[in-house]
Length: 295
Image (cartoon, rainbow, N blue to C red):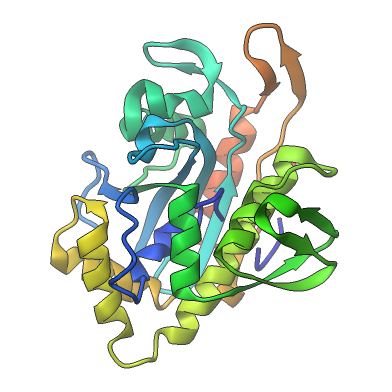
């Protein structure tokens, strides 16, 4: 567990509806209320499934769910937790059979991804957010540069990224590279930890602007114009207000881990213990991960 620690090119999306510039048009970002969820009190807490898609077209829901985070937001305390689920986790996909969990998005859309994550963790999801990497890049540039911490130095020339040990300031393109990088020790598990660090950084920026006159109002209006959403204008506004109350200092995160192996059909896979996943997810439901993140 790393206090203060997403997004795969998008895991911060649960807060990106606070975009303060109506000229940015992230049309491929979707925020949907899960049909089976009951009415949510934004003075209480919600669970959001955030998905980062590898789709290159206009609809991110046609790509693989290559970043999967279960985010619990407690609006009473301002706490937020993020549980990262490896994209290579092997599951029994409804209608597909044995497959990696990230294949659930193109196979059955967000409904199937929600069902798989709920079955794996035992947590009821109220909202699902999906976006592609280019949308994340534009949104970060709109929100403002991000301050992230890294324990290691690495670079990715394709994104103009040069990360040093300690604090780093990233623009949208650099942040996208930071979220995608995995050519270092820890591979995909370390990549998910970086995505969670981006979530904390975005919460930092948004919390800083929350006191600006009209910040939440203009963000909600921008979201209405550019999000694919089934939330009413009133609920979207209330959700934006509630997220603005979250405290970046009260964020905790965990990247679920498990044995890895090479499958002759599926390639690299992660064998995730369901009891372990459910234990961590239950611990995170109040927005604070207090127990061990280890299997």
